[in-house]
Image 1 (cartoon, rainbow, N blue to C red):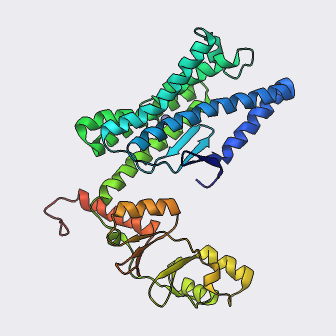
Image 2 (cartoon, helix red, strand yellow):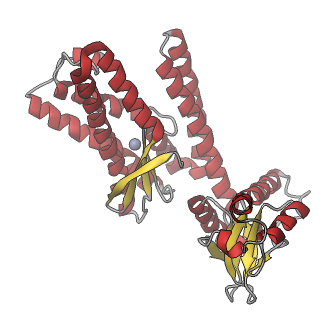
Image 3 (cartoon, helix red, strand yellow):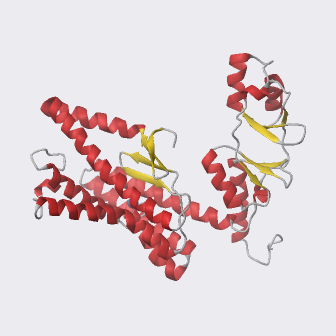
Length: 369
Ligand SMILES: [Zn+2]
């Protein structure tokens, strides 16, 4: 998700704000401004920011719970539909996943209880109908927003927390993979129901949420499948070992020639000792060709920060490294020399083959281990 701007770091987690969220704030401001002038516009934007403070605290509920199990959270992104905390990994133990999933909504329960106490009783339910209506007290509206956040997040569908709660509960009996499959199916049924309801009642926002839930359910079951398939494999199993490299003395012209001659798009730059010094991608090449011409050295155009893993590392570790660097990962031998390259494409092919292999009948499978 690169369409987001970092706001700062709290407890080791970077808080990012997605550009669509800024657009959403602008839209709220304009919509309110058109109705009630600049003061209404400011009040509208302040209210949305308060809602997102509650969402952010919710995400930190997950972050702190995950930390208890040694799981770090590199970043949280704020989107118009809510926050997304990107955990380093999802706990597979049902009891841990249950705690991490429930910790978010629990924060909103606490906020709602505090607001309830501050208001000295149950706020008028009318404030819940249209939380943007400034005729109701700010805290009363915020109370209902938190109640809604709890209910909404406990919908039993991925990527909502309720989906994770459901998987954790199923996981006690069925195991992680089967529990994910069932939870994802339930999620898609719920998403279909929400979408239908949204269409029939003319609520476009609901249709949008349904679409988001539908995609989330599919993505989650795919991610789990990938993790299951990669289990027991090492980085070297999935790496390409036949590829063209560039010497540290090569020019952009040499690189372009290799680009045209092969189907490769990313070229590792390797020194005389076989050590990886960087990677030159096709776009780096084109940029350098325009800016400095074919005679310029690849050393100046290449990307120096390349993720690497030892060849015996679990494939899952390499996949995480690839996700974090969003580029190819170098696979190194025991002496630190470049042995192979792991790209998104060959990883995809690898998993395709593995899933076919897993489905093939045991006897007719010549590769059976
Ligand atoms: Zn949550």
